[in-house]
Length: 302
View 1 (tube, helix red, strand yellow):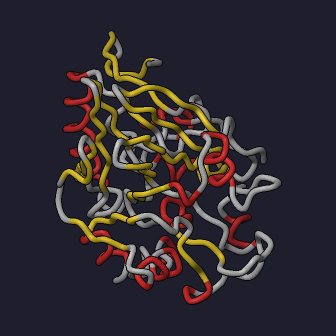
View 2: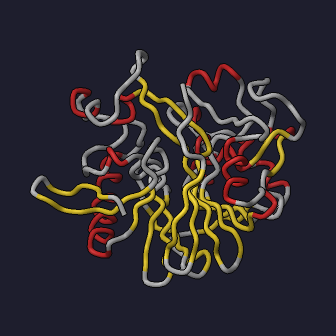
């Protein structure tokens, strides 16, 4: 499997420069990714491999904000072992760098130490795994470290997480335990960098949380507004451009009918306002704008 490219794509959003950073490639089961949508329909958009997996990315967003660099989501990180990486079809390394996210940051001209705020849409391993890293220098794919053997990846950052999501992540059941790993947040708790936030408050001027429950009960998307322009980092509300149709919802979502209503409400605002949609898991398409035609709502290039 080849990882998605490019590592780094940039554009202007009002007064801010934003950077789509590719934190790795991933392959997940196409049926799980599209839920009740039949394979003959979804495979027209994203072809599956011999194991029925489709290629995905783990895109994060870096915002050059006046109050400091803001990073939204962090990919999978460097802590998982070779068996785990194979199961989820993950490729997240680049020669000369600890992780693909670190390489993408460098391509944008920054280092992990430059990041001042990290925001997690939710705490699944492919969105929050890069919050922390192996404390020791170990080869990728080595045995997975315990939480005590991991350290914050971004030493100078505040990490902002929904309080409800944190409670959900720390009280798992048989359905959810495979997605939440203590090693991805315990080190930032120890260091005092973890901040739990509630609701849809403004995190920084022009950056606010938007509750988009469904994938998890407390999933959030991040709305960015600058200079009269608006963008929304969707997280897992709509993981790829292929998921733009309202009923195209992942089988991974714990409350798919809530996902449907979260999408419906956000799509109405985004279409009316010409918002830029930013896709976290699309292997090739970082962003687009909703448009309506004879066949309903679709996506166009910005």
